[in-house]
Length: 491
Ligand code: GLU
Image (cartoon, rainbow, N blue to C red; front, side):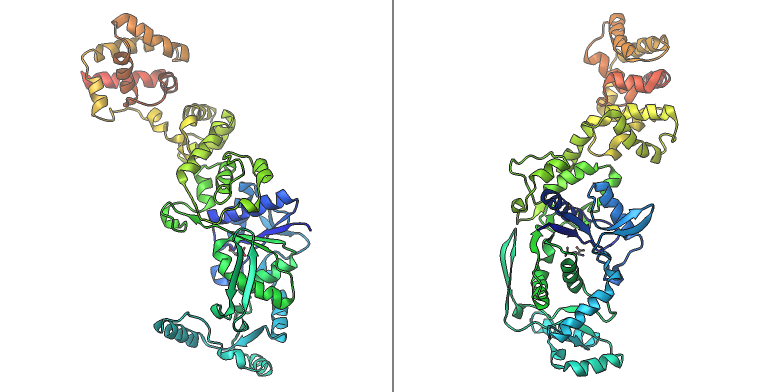
Protein backbone atom coordinates (compact mmCIF):
# COMPACT_ATOMS: atom_id res chain seq x y z
CA UNK A 1 0.00 0.00 0.00
CA UNK A 2 1.38 3.43 -0.93
CA UNK A 3 0.77 5.95 1.78
CA UNK A 4 -1.27 8.93 0.62
CA UNK A 5 -1.95 11.73 3.07
CA UNK A 6 -3.45 15.15 2.66
CA UNK A 7 -3.43 18.60 4.14
CA UNK A 8 -6.87 20.07 3.59
CA UNK A 9 -7.02 23.70 4.68
CA UNK A 10 -9.98 26.01 4.36
CA UNK A 11 -8.61 29.23 2.90
CA UNK A 12 -9.37 31.75 5.62
CA UNK A 13 -6.79 34.40 4.86
CA UNK A 14 -3.84 33.29 6.95
CA UNK A 15 -2.18 30.04 7.97
CA UNK A 16 -2.62 29.22 11.65
CA UNK A 17 0.40 27.74 13.41
CA UNK A 18 -1.76 24.66 14.12
CA UNK A 19 -2.38 24.21 10.40
CA UNK A 20 1.34 24.40 9.75
CA UNK A 21 1.83 21.63 12.31
CA UNK A 22 -0.87 19.49 10.66
CA UNK A 23 0.70 20.04 7.25
CA UNK A 24 4.15 19.26 8.63
CA UNK A 25 3.13 15.96 10.26
CA UNK A 26 1.40 14.88 7.07
CA UNK A 27 4.45 15.88 5.05
CA UNK A 28 6.89 14.08 7.37
CA UNK A 29 4.77 10.96 7.48
CA UNK A 30 4.51 10.88 3.67
CA UNK A 31 8.26 11.36 3.22
CA UNK A 32 9.07 8.81 5.90
CA UNK A 33 6.79 6.24 4.26
CA UNK A 34 7.81 6.97 0.70
CA UNK A 35 4.25 8.09 0.06
CA UNK A 36 2.48 11.08 -1.44
CA UNK A 37 1.50 14.32 0.25
CA UNK A 38 -1.56 15.96 -1.24
CA UNK A 39 -2.91 19.45 -0.75
CA UNK A 40 -6.64 19.98 -1.10
CA UNK A 41 -8.54 23.22 -0.75
CA UNK A 42 -11.71 22.90 1.34
CA UNK A 43 -13.70 25.92 0.27
CA UNK A 44 -17.26 24.68 0.62
CA UNK A 45 -18.18 27.34 3.14
CA UNK A 46 -18.80 30.14 0.70
CA UNK A 47 -19.44 32.63 3.49
CA UNK A 48 -15.85 32.31 4.70
CA UNK A 49 -14.07 32.80 1.40
CA UNK A 50 -11.27 35.37 1.42
CA UNK A 51 -9.78 36.83 -1.75
CA UNK A 52 -6.19 35.71 -2.31
CA UNK A 53 -6.27 33.24 0.57
CA UNK A 54 -5.34 30.22 -1.56
CA UNK A 55 -2.38 32.04 -3.08
CA UNK A 56 -1.29 33.19 0.41
CA UNK A 57 -1.57 29.69 1.78
CA UNK A 58 0.44 28.16 -1.06
CA UNK A 59 3.12 30.82 -0.61
CA UNK A 60 3.33 30.14 3.12
CA UNK A 61 3.65 26.39 2.56
CA UNK A 62 6.34 26.93 -0.01
CA UNK A 63 8.21 29.24 2.39
CA UNK A 64 8.01 26.57 5.10
CA UNK A 65 9.45 24.01 2.69
CA UNK A 66 6.40 21.74 2.79
CA UNK A 67 6.19 20.93 -0.88
CA UNK A 68 3.24 18.81 -1.91
CA UNK A 69 3.08 16.22 -4.67
CA UNK A 70 -0.46 16.82 -5.90
CA UNK A 71 -2.94 19.65 -5.69
CA UNK A 72 -2.99 23.34 -6.54
CA UNK A 73 0.37 25.02 -7.17
CA UNK A 74 1.26 28.65 -7.66
CA UNK A 75 3.02 29.16 -10.96
CA UNK A 76 3.91 32.69 -12.01
CA UNK A 77 1.16 34.03 -9.77
CA UNK A 78 -1.52 31.69 -11.12
CA UNK A 79 -3.01 28.68 -9.37
CA UNK A 80 -2.67 25.52 -11.46
CA UNK A 81 -3.59 22.00 -10.40
CA UNK A 82 -1.47 18.90 -10.85
CA UNK A 83 -2.21 15.27 -10.13
CA UNK A 84 -4.44 12.47 -11.29
CA UNK A 85 -7.07 12.81 -8.58
CA UNK A 86 -8.21 16.37 -9.22
CA UNK A 87 -9.79 18.74 -9.11
CA UNK A 88 -8.22 19.41 -5.73
CA UNK A 89 -10.47 22.36 -4.94
CA UNK A 90 -13.78 21.32 -3.43
CA UNK A 91 -15.86 24.06 -5.05
CA UNK A 92 -14.87 22.49 -8.39
CA UNK A 93 -16.20 19.08 -7.32
CA UNK A 94 -19.83 19.94 -6.65
CA UNK A 95 -21.16 17.56 -9.31
CA UNK A 96 -19.33 14.69 -7.57
CA UNK A 97 -20.89 15.40 -4.17
CA UNK A 98 -24.38 15.72 -5.69
CA UNK A 99 -24.06 12.33 -7.27
CA UNK A 100 -23.04 10.74 -3.96
CA UNK A 101 -25.83 12.55 -2.12
CA UNK A 102 -28.23 10.92 -4.54
CA UNK A 103 -26.73 7.50 -3.72
CA UNK A 104 -27.28 8.13 0.00
CA UNK A 105 -30.91 9.11 -0.61
CA UNK A 106 -31.45 5.96 -2.64
CA UNK A 107 -29.89 3.68 -0.04
CA UNK A 108 -31.82 5.35 2.79
CA UNK A 109 -28.75 6.74 4.54
CA UNK A 110 -29.87 10.31 4.02
CA UNK A 111 -33.08 12.31 3.67
CA UNK A 112 -34.14 15.73 2.42
CA UNK A 113 -35.10 18.15 5.18
CA UNK A 114 -37.36 21.12 4.50
CA UNK A 115 -37.34 22.69 7.95
CA UNK A 116 -37.00 26.45 7.87
CA UNK A 117 -34.28 28.34 9.67
CA UNK A 118 -36.97 29.76 11.98
CA UNK A 119 -38.18 26.31 12.97
CA UNK A 120 -34.63 25.14 13.64
CA UNK A 121 -33.87 28.26 15.68
CA UNK A 122 -37.02 27.76 17.77
CA UNK A 123 -36.20 24.10 18.24
CA UNK A 124 -32.70 24.94 19.46
CA UNK A 125 -34.01 27.57 21.87
CA UNK A 126 -36.59 25.19 23.32
CA UNK A 127 -34.02 22.44 23.73
CA UNK A 128 -31.67 24.85 25.45
CA UNK A 129 -34.37 26.00 27.87
CA UNK A 130 -35.24 22.37 28.61
CA UNK A 131 -31.56 21.63 29.25
CA UNK A 132 -31.41 19.13 26.38
CA UNK A 133 -28.61 18.62 23.83
CA UNK A 134 -29.39 20.83 20.86
CA UNK A 135 -29.93 18.76 17.78
CA UNK A 136 -32.33 18.17 14.93
CA UNK A 137 -35.50 16.38 16.05
CA UNK A 138 -35.91 14.31 12.89
CA UNK A 139 -39.21 15.85 11.76
CA UNK A 140 -38.48 15.31 8.04
CA UNK A 141 -37.14 11.77 8.44
CA UNK A 142 -40.56 10.30 7.83
CA UNK A 143 -41.36 12.15 4.60
CA UNK A 144 -41.47 9.49 1.85
CA UNK A 145 -38.66 10.01 -0.66
CA UNK A 146 -41.10 10.32 -3.60
CA UNK A 147 -43.00 13.08 -1.87
CA UNK A 148 -39.74 14.80 -0.94
CA UNK A 149 -38.60 14.61 -4.57
CA UNK A 150 -41.86 16.27 -5.71
CA UNK A 151 -41.35 19.08 -3.23
CA UNK A 152 -37.77 19.53 -4.44
CA UNK A 153 -38.96 19.66 -8.05
CA UNK A 154 -41.39 22.37 -7.05
CA UNK A 155 -38.39 24.40 -5.95
CA UNK A 156 -38.79 24.01 -2.20
CA UNK A 157 -35.63 24.94 -0.30
CA UNK A 158 -34.06 21.94 1.42
CA UNK A 159 -30.93 20.40 2.81
CA UNK A 160 -29.92 16.74 2.85
CA UNK A 161 -29.29 15.16 6.21
CA UNK A 162 -27.55 12.03 7.37
CA UNK A 163 -30.08 9.42 8.53
CA UNK A 164 -28.50 7.92 11.61
CA UNK A 165 -30.09 4.79 13.04
CA UNK A 166 -30.95 4.89 16.72
CA UNK A 167 -28.64 3.38 19.31
CA UNK A 168 -25.77 2.24 17.12
CA UNK A 169 -22.22 2.17 18.46
CA UNK A 170 -19.77 3.62 15.96
CA UNK A 171 -16.19 2.62 16.62
CA UNK A 172 -12.86 3.48 15.07
CA UNK A 173 -9.21 3.15 16.01
CA UNK A 174 -7.16 6.31 16.31
CA UNK A 175 -3.43 5.65 16.01
CA UNK A 176 -2.72 8.10 18.84
CA UNK A 177 -5.81 7.75 20.99
CA UNK A 178 -6.70 4.12 20.57
CA UNK A 179 -10.28 2.92 20.25
CA UNK A 180 -13.00 5.58 20.15
CA UNK A 181 -16.68 4.63 20.39
CA UNK A 182 -19.66 6.96 20.09
CA UNK A 183 -23.33 5.98 20.14
CA UNK A 184 -25.65 7.45 17.50
CA UNK A 185 -28.04 8.46 20.30
CA UNK A 186 -25.44 11.11 21.12
CA UNK A 187 -25.10 12.27 17.53
CA UNK A 188 -27.04 14.58 15.25
CA UNK A 189 -28.51 14.01 11.79
CA UNK A 190 -25.73 16.06 10.28
CA UNK A 191 -26.48 18.23 7.25
CA UNK A 192 -24.56 16.78 4.30
CA UNK A 193 -25.74 19.03 1.48
CA UNK A 194 -26.70 22.64 2.13
CA UNK A 195 -29.58 24.57 0.58
CA UNK A 196 -27.13 26.32 -1.78
CA UNK A 197 -26.20 22.94 -3.28
CA UNK A 198 -22.80 22.91 -1.64
CA UNK A 199 -21.76 19.97 0.48
CA UNK A 200 -20.86 20.47 4.11
CA UNK A 201 -17.33 19.69 5.23
CA UNK A 202 -18.45 16.26 6.51
CA UNK A 203 -19.82 15.13 3.16
CA UNK A 204 -17.00 16.52 1.05
CA UNK A 205 -14.19 15.29 3.25
CA UNK A 206 -15.33 11.67 3.16
CA UNK A 207 -15.93 11.59 -0.57
CA UNK A 208 -12.67 13.31 -1.37
CA UNK A 209 -10.53 11.29 0.99
CA UNK A 210 -11.96 8.12 -0.50
CA UNK A 211 -11.73 9.20 -4.14
CA UNK A 212 -8.26 10.62 -3.70
CA UNK A 213 -7.04 7.33 -2.26
CA UNK A 214 -6.12 8.81 1.12
CA UNK A 215 -4.73 6.12 3.43
CA UNK A 216 -4.17 8.17 6.62
CA UNK A 217 -6.10 11.16 7.88
CA UNK A 218 -3.84 13.22 10.14
CA UNK A 219 -5.64 16.27 11.49
CA UNK A 220 -6.27 18.35 14.59
CA UNK A 221 -8.05 17.12 17.68
CA UNK A 222 -10.94 19.50 17.02
CA UNK A 223 -12.14 17.13 14.29
CA UNK A 224 -12.34 14.11 16.59
CA UNK A 225 -16.07 14.56 17.35
CA UNK A 226 -16.77 14.61 13.59
CA UNK A 227 -15.03 11.35 12.86
CA UNK A 228 -17.90 9.01 13.91
CA UNK A 229 -20.14 10.70 11.33
CA UNK A 230 -17.46 10.16 8.74
CA UNK A 231 -17.06 6.52 9.71
CA UNK A 232 -20.82 6.07 9.35
CA UNK A 233 -20.60 7.55 5.85
CA UNK A 234 -17.74 5.26 4.85
CA UNK A 235 -19.87 2.33 5.95
CA UNK A 236 -22.92 3.68 4.15
CA UNK A 237 -20.96 3.86 0.91
CA UNK A 238 -19.40 0.47 1.55
CA UNK A 239 -15.90 1.95 1.62
CA UNK A 240 -12.94 1.14 3.83
CA UNK A 241 -12.18 4.11 6.08
CA UNK A 242 -8.62 5.43 6.13
CA UNK A 243 -6.55 5.28 9.33
CA UNK A 244 -7.18 8.23 11.64
CA UNK A 245 -4.78 10.28 13.72
CA UNK A 246 -5.95 13.26 15.74
CA UNK A 247 -3.16 15.60 16.78
CA UNK A 248 -3.23 17.20 20.23
CA UNK A 249 -4.27 20.84 20.55
CA UNK A 250 -1.67 23.54 20.60
CA UNK A 251 -2.15 25.58 23.76
CA UNK A 252 -1.29 28.99 25.12
CA UNK A 253 0.87 29.02 28.25
CA UNK A 254 -2.39 29.28 30.27
CA UNK A 255 -3.32 25.87 28.75
CA UNK A 256 -6.23 27.33 26.75
CA UNK A 257 -6.36 26.69 23.03
CA UNK A 258 -3.89 28.87 21.12
CA UNK A 259 -5.73 31.99 20.14
CA UNK A 260 -4.99 35.23 18.37
CA UNK A 261 -5.74 37.25 21.46
CA UNK A 262 -2.57 36.11 23.20
CA UNK A 263 -0.06 36.83 20.45
CA UNK A 264 0.88 35.80 16.97
CA UNK A 265 -0.73 32.65 15.59
CA UNK A 266 -0.32 33.20 11.86
CA UNK A 267 2.64 31.69 10.05
CA UNK A 268 2.78 34.92 8.06
CA UNK A 269 3.32 36.91 11.30
CA UNK A 270 6.32 34.78 12.20
CA UNK A 271 7.66 35.05 8.67
CA UNK A 272 7.36 38.84 8.80
CA UNK A 273 9.17 39.05 12.11
CA UNK A 274 12.03 37.06 10.67
CA UNK A 275 11.70 33.57 12.02
CA UNK A 276 13.60 31.27 9.70
CA UNK A 277 11.44 28.59 8.12
CA UNK A 278 13.83 25.83 9.20
CA UNK A 279 13.64 27.03 12.81
CA UNK A 280 9.87 27.52 12.87
CA UNK A 281 9.27 24.12 11.32
CA UNK A 282 11.76 22.50 13.70
CA UNK A 283 10.06 24.08 16.70
CA UNK A 284 6.52 23.31 15.49
CA UNK A 285 7.48 19.68 14.88
CA UNK A 286 8.10 19.31 18.62
CA UNK A 287 4.59 20.49 19.53
CA UNK A 288 3.05 17.08 20.00
CA UNK A 289 5.85 14.83 18.80
CA UNK A 290 9.26 13.95 20.18
CA UNK A 291 11.92 11.75 18.64
CA UNK A 292 13.20 8.79 20.59
CA UNK A 293 16.44 10.46 21.69
CA UNK A 294 14.66 13.70 22.63
CA UNK A 295 16.89 15.78 20.35
CA UNK A 296 15.57 19.23 19.70
CA UNK A 297 17.51 20.88 16.91
CA UNK A 298 16.97 18.84 13.78
CA UNK A 299 16.99 19.43 10.05
CA UNK A 300 13.96 18.41 8.03
CA UNK A 301 15.82 15.33 6.78
CA UNK A 302 16.60 14.29 10.37
CA UNK A 303 13.03 14.84 11.48
CA UNK A 304 11.64 12.83 8.58
CA UNK A 305 14.08 10.05 9.42
CA UNK A 306 12.97 9.97 13.07
CA UNK A 307 9.26 10.68 12.62
CA UNK A 308 6.61 8.19 13.64
CA UNK A 309 2.92 8.60 14.41
CA UNK A 310 3.34 6.33 17.43
CA UNK A 311 5.42 9.02 19.11
CA UNK A 312 2.73 11.68 18.73
CA UNK A 313 1.37 12.56 22.15
CA UNK A 314 -2.25 12.66 23.27
CA UNK A 315 -1.96 15.68 25.51
CA UNK A 316 -1.92 19.30 24.39
CA UNK A 317 1.37 21.01 23.61
CA UNK A 318 2.12 24.50 24.90
CA UNK A 319 3.31 27.00 22.34
CA UNK A 320 6.23 28.73 24.03
CA UNK A 321 7.51 31.78 22.17
CA UNK A 322 10.64 31.87 24.37
CA UNK A 323 11.56 28.43 23.20
CA UNK A 324 10.82 29.29 19.60
CA UNK A 325 13.08 32.34 20.03
CA UNK A 326 15.83 30.14 21.40
CA UNK A 327 15.47 27.72 18.50
CA UNK A 328 15.46 30.53 15.96
CA UNK A 329 18.52 32.11 17.54
CA UNK A 330 20.41 28.83 17.08
CA UNK A 331 19.64 28.89 13.36
CA UNK A 332 20.58 32.57 13.10
CA UNK A 333 23.92 31.98 14.83
CA UNK A 334 24.93 29.23 12.46
CA UNK A 335 24.06 31.15 9.32
CA UNK A 336 27.00 32.52 7.28
CA UNK A 337 27.23 36.27 7.92
CA UNK A 338 26.77 37.32 4.31
CA UNK A 339 23.63 35.19 3.97
CA UNK A 340 22.28 36.63 7.19
CA UNK A 341 22.97 40.14 5.90
CA UNK A 342 20.99 39.30 2.74
CA UNK A 343 18.08 38.15 4.90
CA UNK A 344 18.31 41.29 7.05
CA UNK A 345 18.57 43.90 4.30
CA UNK A 346 14.79 44.24 3.82
CA UNK A 347 14.39 45.24 7.48
CA UNK A 348 17.00 48.01 7.13
CA UNK A 349 15.41 49.21 3.90
CA UNK A 350 11.85 49.06 5.25
CA UNK A 351 12.80 51.20 8.23
CA UNK A 352 14.48 53.69 5.91
CA UNK A 353 17.91 53.14 7.48
CA UNK A 354 19.58 52.44 4.17
CA UNK A 355 18.78 52.90 0.50
CA UNK A 356 18.42 49.78 -1.62
CA UNK A 357 21.45 49.21 -3.82
CA UNK A 358 23.68 51.58 -1.85
CA UNK A 359 26.99 49.86 -1.20
CA UNK A 360 27.83 51.98 1.81
CA UNK A 361 24.40 51.13 3.24
CA UNK A 362 25.04 47.44 2.85
CA UNK A 363 28.41 47.73 4.58
CA UNK A 364 26.73 49.54 7.48
CA UNK A 365 23.98 46.90 7.66
CA UNK A 366 26.63 44.17 7.60
CA UNK A 367 28.44 45.77 10.54
CA UNK A 368 25.23 46.04 12.54
CA UNK A 369 24.20 42.48 11.72
CA UNK A 370 27.64 41.17 12.67
CA UNK A 371 27.50 42.69 16.14
CA UNK A 372 23.82 41.79 16.66
CA UNK A 373 23.95 38.23 15.39
CA UNK A 374 24.56 36.52 18.71
CA UNK A 375 21.76 38.29 20.53
CA UNK A 376 19.07 38.18 17.85
CA UNK A 377 16.00 36.02 18.38
CA UNK A 378 14.42 36.96 15.07
CA UNK A 379 15.54 38.98 12.09
CA UNK A 380 13.38 42.06 12.73
CA UNK A 381 15.65 42.69 15.74
CA UNK A 382 18.60 43.22 13.38
CA UNK A 383 18.00 46.96 13.29
CA UNK A 384 17.65 47.44 17.05
CA UNK A 385 21.16 48.86 17.36
CA UNK A 386 20.85 51.28 14.45
CA UNK A 387 19.63 54.29 16.47
CA UNK A 388 22.66 53.92 18.72
CA UNK A 389 24.87 54.59 15.72
CA UNK A 390 22.70 56.89 13.62
CA UNK A 391 21.70 59.36 16.32
CA UNK A 392 23.38 62.75 15.85
CA UNK A 393 23.76 63.22 19.60
CA UNK A 394 23.32 60.90 22.56
CA UNK A 395 22.24 61.72 26.09
CA UNK A 396 23.14 59.62 29.13
CA UNK A 397 20.29 57.13 29.28
CA UNK A 398 19.98 57.11 33.08
CA UNK A 399 21.26 58.55 36.37
CA UNK A 400 24.02 55.96 36.69
CA UNK A 401 25.43 56.85 33.28
CA UNK A 402 25.30 60.53 34.14
CA UNK A 403 27.13 59.90 37.42
CA UNK A 404 29.81 58.00 35.51
CA UNK A 405 30.39 61.07 33.36
CA UNK A 406 30.35 63.52 36.25
CA UNK A 407 33.50 62.13 37.83
CA UNK A 408 36.18 64.84 38.18
CA UNK A 409 38.72 63.23 35.85
CA UNK A 410 36.35 62.72 32.93
CA UNK A 411 36.41 66.04 31.04
CA UNK A 412 40.17 66.11 30.83
CA UNK A 413 40.35 62.45 29.86
CA UNK A 414 37.76 62.92 27.11
CA UNK A 415 39.86 65.80 25.80
CA UNK A 416 42.91 63.57 25.49
CA UNK A 417 40.83 60.85 23.84
CA UNK A 418 39.39 63.32 21.35
CA UNK A 419 42.86 64.63 20.46
CA UNK A 420 44.03 61.11 19.65
CA UNK A 421 40.97 60.41 17.49
CA UNK A 422 41.46 63.67 15.62
CA UNK A 423 45.06 62.72 14.85
CA UNK A 424 44.23 59.57 12.86
CA UNK A 425 42.85 59.28 9.33
CA UNK A 426 40.28 56.66 10.21
CA UNK A 427 39.15 54.78 13.30
CA UNK A 428 40.09 51.19 12.57
CA UNK A 429 40.24 48.22 14.99
CA UNK A 430 43.98 48.62 15.55
CA UNK A 431 43.55 52.24 16.56
CA UNK A 432 40.45 51.48 18.61
CA UNK A 433 42.51 49.13 20.75
CA UNK A 434 45.64 51.29 20.92
CA UNK A 435 43.88 54.53 21.84
CA UNK A 436 43.02 53.32 25.34
CA UNK A 437 46.65 52.45 26.06
CA UNK A 438 47.63 55.91 24.84
CA UNK A 439 45.01 57.66 26.98
CA UNK A 440 46.18 55.63 29.97
CA UNK A 441 49.84 56.54 29.29
CA UNK A 442 48.94 60.22 29.05
CA UNK A 443 46.60 60.46 32.05
CA UNK A 444 47.46 57.55 34.30
CA UNK A 445 43.76 56.60 34.35
CA UNK A 446 42.98 52.94 33.73
CA UNK A 447 40.42 50.16 33.95
CA UNK A 448 36.78 51.01 34.58
CA UNK A 449 37.53 54.66 35.22
CA UNK A 450 38.98 54.84 31.73
CA UNK A 451 36.57 52.73 29.68
CA UNK A 452 33.20 53.44 31.23
CA UNK A 453 33.09 57.23 30.93
CA UNK A 454 34.25 57.01 27.31
CA UNK A 455 31.56 54.43 26.61
CA UNK A 456 28.99 56.62 28.34
CA UNK A 457 30.09 59.66 26.35
CA UNK A 458 29.97 58.02 22.95
CA UNK A 459 26.92 55.82 23.40
CA UNK A 460 24.96 57.27 26.34
CA UNK A 461 24.98 53.79 27.92
CA UNK A 462 27.16 51.77 30.25
CA UNK A 463 26.57 48.54 28.34
CA UNK A 464 26.28 47.63 24.68
CA UNK A 465 28.42 46.49 21.79
CA UNK A 466 32.16 45.84 22.14
CA UNK A 467 34.13 49.08 22.36
CA UNK A 468 36.05 48.31 19.16
CA UNK A 469 32.78 47.80 17.26
CA UNK A 470 31.20 50.84 18.81
CA UNK A 471 34.11 53.05 17.75
CA UNK A 472 34.77 51.66 14.29
CA UNK A 473 31.11 51.67 13.26
CA UNK A 474 30.57 55.18 14.61
CA UNK A 475 33.63 56.38 12.67
CA UNK A 476 35.89 59.32 13.25
CA UNK A 477 33.48 62.21 12.62
CA UNK A 478 30.62 60.98 14.75
CA UNK A 479 32.98 59.88 17.49
CA UNK A 480 34.47 63.37 17.73
CA UNK A 481 31.11 65.10 17.71
CA UNK A 482 29.77 62.85 20.48
CA UNK A 483 32.86 63.48 22.64
CA UNK A 484 32.52 67.21 22.01
CA UNK A 485 28.86 67.08 23.02
CA UNK A 486 29.72 65.25 26.22
CA UNK A 487 32.47 67.71 27.12
CA UNK A 488 30.15 70.65 26.43
CA UNK A 489 27.43 69.12 28.61
CA UNK A 490 29.84 68.54 31.49
CA UNK A 491 31.71 71.83 31.37
N1 GLU B 1 -10.86 21.83 6.16
C1 GLU B 1 -10.56 21.36 7.45
C2 GLU B 1 -9.73 22.42 8.16
O1 GLU B 1 -9.83 23.53 7.82
C3 GLU B 1 -9.81 20.05 7.33
C4 GLU B 1 -10.10 19.06 8.39
C5 GLU B 1 -9.57 17.69 7.98
O2 GLU B 1 -8.35 17.60 7.81
O3 GLU B 1 -10.34 16.79 7.80
O4 GLU B 1 -8.98 22.20 9.04
